[in-house]
Each structure stands twice: as C-alpha cells, then as structure tokens.
Amino acid sequence: MELSCSVGGSAAAPPGPGPGPPGPIPAPSVPPPMEGEDYESLPSGASLGTHMLAGAVAGIMEHSVMYPVDSVKTRMQSLQPDPKAQYRSVYEALKKMVLTEGFWRPLRGINVTMLGAGPAHAMYFACYEKMKKSLSETIQHGGNSHLANGIAGSVATLLHDAVMNPAEVVKQRMQMFNSPYKSVWQCVRTVQKTEGFGAFYRSYTTQLTMNVPFQAIHFITYEFMQERVNPHREYHPLSHVCSGAVAGAVAAAATTPLDVCKTLLNTQENTALSSLNITGHLSGMANAFRTVYQLGGIAGYFRGVQARVIYQIPSTAIAWSVYEFFKYFLTKHKLEKRTSL
Image (tube, rainbow, N blue to C red; front, side):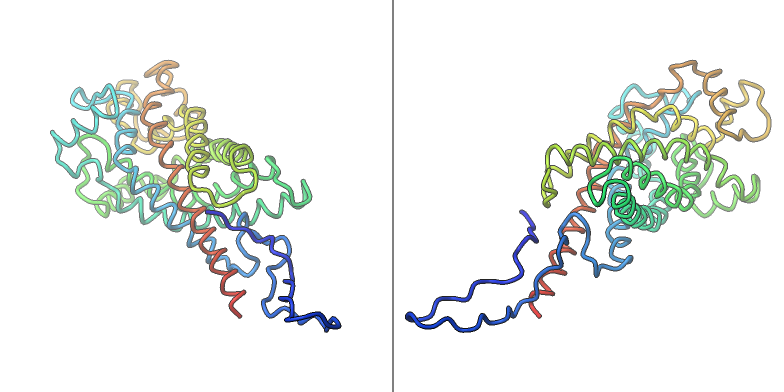
C-alpha cells in the first residue's frame, strides 16, 4: 500500500468529438496537494493534537502488549533475588510466575503503566516530529539529517521521562517478587509517606542518562534502516516493523547497564542493600553504578539483557508500526478530504 502525493497541479482536458480551434483550458476543479506535502510528515494542516493522538495510541499499545516480558525483565535485573525468583530464561520466568503466583501476576501494575504511557508518548512523538523537521531544515536544508534525528529523540525523552518516571517507580515495585503492595494506589501512598515525593524521581537522572543515548541510537538506527529498506518513505508496514525491531534491539543492548542501575534505584532492593550494610535509601547514578559492581561485578551490569532485548524488539516494532499507520491514515484522510472539496 502506497501513498503518493506527487500528482501534478492540473489534469489534461478530455479530447472533444472532432477537430476544432483550441478553446481555453478549464481551470482544475480539484485543488492540488500543497507542494512538498507527503506521507513522511503529516499535512501542514494537522494539529499538534493529531501527532499526540498517534503517539499516545502507539505508546499504550507498545507497553500493554509487551508488559509480561517487562515484568520478567524487572525480576531478572534483581541483584540478589529470592531463591524462588531465580530464572534462567524469559520463558521459564513467565511459566514459573503463572504457575506459582497466578495467571494475572505478570500483568500486575499494568494499569499505572498505561496511565503514564499515553501522555508520555503523546508528548514524546509530537516533540520528536516538530524538532526533527525544524532541525533537518536548518542542518540539511529539509533533507534527512541523522544528527537532527538524534537531537530530536534526545530532547523528546526529557518530556517523556518527566511523565513516565513516577509510573516506572510504582510499576517496578509492583512487579518485584513478594511485593508488599496490594494495589497501585497503596504503593503510591506508602512510597510518598515513607520516602517522600522525591522517591518518584530518584532514578530520573539515571533514567535520562539511559534514555537519551537509547533514544538517540534508536531514532538514528530507525531512520538509517528506513533509508535502506524504504528509501521513498512510503507507507510500508513490513519496513516499519523491521526497522523498529532492529532499532530497539541495538539500543536496548547498548544501554542495559544503565537500565540495571535504574531498576536498583526504583526498587531499592532491601536484601541487596543490606548485604553491603547500606542504610537508608540509595540515590544517585554514581552510587547505583558502584553498588551494582560491588554486588555483581561486570556481569551485574548485564543482568536481564536477554529479557530487555526480547522486550524491546517487538515493543519498538509495535510502537513504530502503529505510529506510522496513524501518520499514513491521517495524511490520506486529509488529502482525500481536500480533493473532495
């Protein structure tokens, strides 16, 4: 399926029944698409809300579909897991969780994730599209600039994580083995009461330190892949799925050490911290890095890398395919509406 907007501004009039002097060429009744307007960027008339809607749907789909694997990732990143929560693979972990803790256990905390993912991804994609277009025009005169893609993805991450970080804290505490929290609301109240509001942003700097390079690698890889497999930037679902999957896998593997540190700051593993005689709450990226090394050495930085990559491959593939579909659908709808006038 392709969407082409390169139709000329006028169409030739049908020939008359016989030869005769040429008459005036009638004005076209269909207004042409604006020059340079195509699927790659939403129509000039598209509102900010259109970008945000496409991003919100993509984010909710991405996080909800892959949430069970995310639960496994959180547990596999535990530095000193309970003997009953030690897993050798993603499949074994899911099977063990369902059999010993109930069918719905891998989905525990999904509601707060969906609540945060909608607005977070809405701002994320809207900011990315706006900045990518502005920077590309400045850096490469409207062409596709990898530098612009990386900068746009990094800045968009600042907005995304500001909304998503509190949801991440609650989600990961709900996901841990033997989590003491019965509900999301109880978790929020308990954390706020015992650790203060700052607990919801304790991992924010680490999250940014992880997500800025993650998103820079992610967007650069995605756009690079699109240049190779979909150079004309048409709507081609398979190319979006493949590009998103490769981008997610590369970025996830490269940033796993930072994700392990983020998980430690979010969950404040009591067993792990007590083994090092750490009292109070662990804070700061430098402390997290040092603690991970003390507990697990170099290998500790790559705990859960298998689950993280397995999560990100379909996760980013879903996000990009859903987002690109909305871009295509909304662009096509806008052009059809214009030509019907």
